[in-house]
Image 1 (cartoon, rainbow, N blue to C red):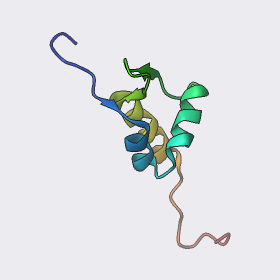
Image 2 (image 1 turned 90 degrees about the vertical axis):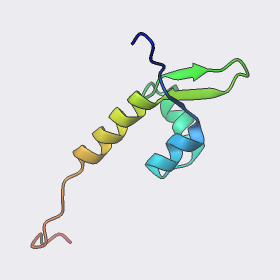
Image 3 (image 1 turned 180 degrees about the vertical axis):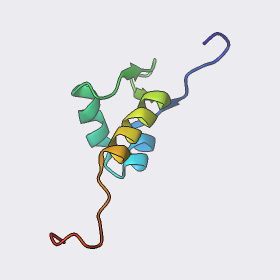
Image 4 (image 1 turned 90 degrees about the horizontal axis):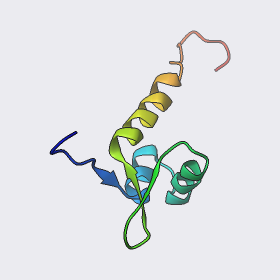
Length: 72
């Protein structure tokens, strides 16, 4: 990745993508789901590439609902 910089997102930006609160994102990071990057001002940032992978894993893991499914 010479010459390229990783895009970093705030907890609020990540939370908006997942439709959860920023505290949930911080809890996920503390649980090891996301890598925490601390800024010089001691704020947390998250790698966009990791966030996208986690988002994909959430969206591909869900099973589409069939119309004729009697459980609905």
